Amino acid sequence: MSALIEMQGVTKSYGSFTALDNVTLSLSGTSPSMTAVAGESGSGKTTLARMMLGFINPSIGHVLYRGKDVAKMSGTEQRQFRREVQPVFQDPFDVFNPFYRIDHVLETPVKRYKLADTQAGARAMIEDALKRVGLRPQDTLGRFPHELSGGQRQRVMVARAVLLRPKLIVADEPVSMVDASLRATILDELKTLNRELGISIVYITHDLTTAFQICDNIMILYRGTVSEAGSVERVIGAPKHPYSQLLVSSIPLPDLDKTWGSDEVPVSEASAARANPGCKFAPRCPHVMEMCWDNVPPKYVPDSQRLATCFLYRDAPVAPGDDVAVVFRPPDGPVAVAAS
Image (tube, rainbow, N blue to C red):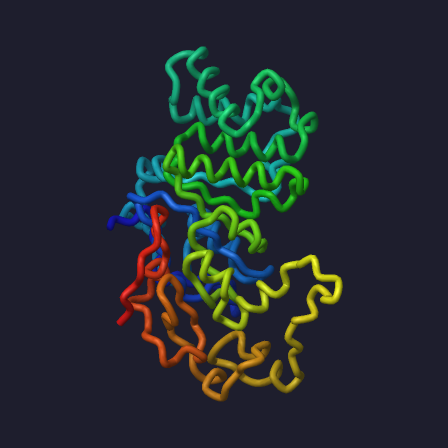
């Protein structure tokens, strides 16, 4: 199966700080999917997104788009890549120039990529894109950014991406600054784009609830490394890695007898100070073993459609190869993974 985009053993370091550590992930070019990348602040989610978009290059490893190294693309290849891989950012207001009307941010890509031969054709494309994301063109065009709500501005940015008919949208926390009442609507619209237009979506989030609602698969990062990955039903429904379990247990539930965050694992001073070339989660892990401190756990496959980098599952087979997508559930249905 040909890959749309591949991250091959990518590491990104800033001096002595490693933001992303040896991550390998591929997304199919023939089966458009919705993939969540989750983790707490500082886990490397945004670094992964920026690398996938070609904004930064890896310190080690390669990012390939349709088999070509993004860092080595020619000008023509980069232009095509920029059209086919589109971002949707966390804060839509930062993208707008307050001195231009909303029309400007939509007309610019149409002109740059020569998407329409006439002004009337361009207008029709823009109106269709706005309608696809639930906006009324007559209520949106001609207005300045400050005259729209946060949810409307975010929808305009999704519409801008849709104009280019991309193969991949990388949405970095796209609803974290939107009113709760609009979050589900915007996420449903992304899901509709995936299903109706065949656009793959990478959804960067710290919100496991929304990831579960709209995505097929999920990869959970902890301090730049993959802790668990697989179908959202398996990983969020019954997490295996202690870090994943901690994240899921932190989801607020309507239980008056339970204090939110009461499952947080305390870190002892001795654990925090101990040298740790092994599992990065060891200082916080309630199941830490001696082997965890000195050895990096491989990607074990404790069951189909899931891998976990944890020695608790050392009796399970190791995933074949480094690509975490080997345990992903195809969008059209479940499949078991034969690990070796």
